[in-house]
Length: 434
Image (cartoon, rainbow, N blue to C red; front, side, top):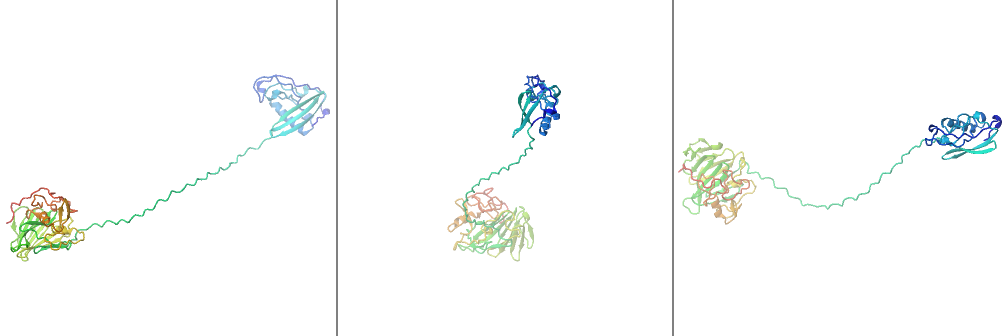
C-alpha cells in the first residue's frame, strides 16, 4: 500500500508527545498513570488515502482512537503504549502535524489468533516500522453436539444351579370321618343271652349268676340288666330284670310281673296298660299288657323294647331319628359300643362266652379290644352295683371307664382310665322295687 503525497499539503509531522493518561483513558491495562511511549505517526485519513484497504483500516483506527484514549483524536493519531491501558495523551491532530513527505506501505498478516497490519512509513528521512493489531474475525458460536454415551453392557449372571428334584411318595389321605350308626338301626339281646350289635356282629356274653351289667350307657340314658341262672341249669344265664334311667326317672321291668315306674322320685308304681308316662328330659314309657312289651324312649336317641317271654326278657334297641351322637356323646356298654360307626362288625372269638374279641377293656392302663383269656376282666369291668347305678362302680370299688351317663369320660375314643367316675360308690336307691 502507498500514499500519494501530492494529495496532502507539505507539513511537518512530529512524533507523538509523551504524556500521562488518566486512569480512565486506558482500555486494557492497569488503572494508574504511566509515561507513554513516543507516538507513532498516525494513518492518513480518508481524505489522504486512495487505497480501499487503507480506508477501512483508517476507519478502524479512527474508531479505536476515538474510544480508547491511546489513539489521537482527529484524522491522525499517535499510537502510543498508552492506547492499551498504559495511558498517554492523544496524538496531535492532523492539522497540527506538518510533514514534508510521507511514504509507506502496509502488509496484513493473517493468523488463527487474529490479523496484524505491518506498516512502514518514511517521514522526513526516518523509516518507522509499525504493527497494528486487527480485531480477529467474528467466529460463529460453538455448537455442542452431544456425544452419545454408550450404555454399559450388563454383565451376564450365571443362573442358579438347578435344585435337585425330590419326588415324594404320595401320602394317603386320612380316612373320612366315621359316621355313627344311621338312625333306625337296631340291635338286640335275646336268649341265654346272645348279642347282635348295631354293626351286625354277633357274640355271646354269659356274665355271672345274680350280677348286674351295663348294656348301654349314654349321656342321660342308662340301661342295666340283671343276669340269673336259667331254670337252675348251670352254665346258662338269662336276663331276668331290666332297669332304665332317663334323667331322674327310673323304669323297672321283671319278667312275669307288671313293670313299675318311678318318675322324679315319687316312688315306684305299677304301669297301666296303654298309658304313656312322661319321663324326665322328654323321655316316655308305655306298657302294652297284651303284647307284654314295655317301650322306653329317651326322646332323642334311643327306643328300647323289653319283651316278656315268660321265663326271661328279650331286648330290642332302636336308634332314634337324631342318631346316637345327637348330644355329642357316643354310647358304650356291652351292646352300646357296637354303634361306633367304624364300618366293622364285631364278632366274638369262637367258643367264647364273655364277648372276647368284641368288647373293650382297660388293660395295662390302656383301652383295647379284649382277646381270648380276658373273660374275667370283661365280667368285672362291665359289672355295676344295681339296676340304677350310673357310675358303674366295680366290685373293687372303682368306677367303670365305659360309663357315659354323666358325660365325664373320653367318649369319642372310648378310652378312659379306671376310676374316672365323679362320685365313687353309688348306693342302692331307698325306694328300690321289690
